[in-house]
Image (cartoon, rainbow, N blue to C red; front, side, top):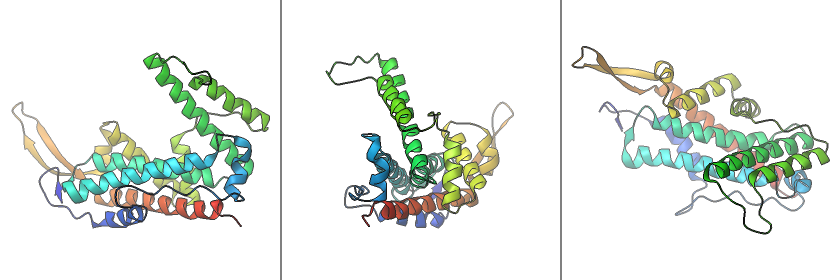
Length: 260
């Protein structure tokens, strides 16, 4: 494995995460989580939510997490390159994906789980409307509706079910809650996510908290360029958090989607 400064790096600590994701890979694609059984707990959760149940979101989030891990697998095993930004960016995406699936599965009761599903659907439609505004999308089909109209329908459904108002979801809150139910340290897991988000957005501070300086070079203006490499201990913790959330999702989904 070649690092961004040309050195060699042992990243065998990523193997457990890669192996966990590979369990869902067929020859050229990842297998989707199966649809829940007709009389399962998950179907009972989703029954009054119409098209906006949690199962679709869980399946989509889990698949997205697997694809993020697959991208890191190829970066490591095929390209043989490990820069200070990409691994954190990919694992940050995977962590959010798996944590979202866990959060939807592990609400304390049926009302809370339904509420969480509708929170995410309302946010999905809000983001869709923002995109429609940007591209000046015009509804044309007889049954087609805008993101704003769909969001209003989701809010009306929540009201009809006697559920609380639907706030904007916070990724940090979702990760904290999911980490707790998956047996992880919630503050440490959320802190790792913050580092990943910092790298994804090109911030400077993550270099100070989750990278190691491996060398420096003097430049013509009298300054120096620092060569940063990944902090293996922290990236290992991030990979382990992703693995545990992945496996917790699969375990809980199997239990809650199976017909008694």
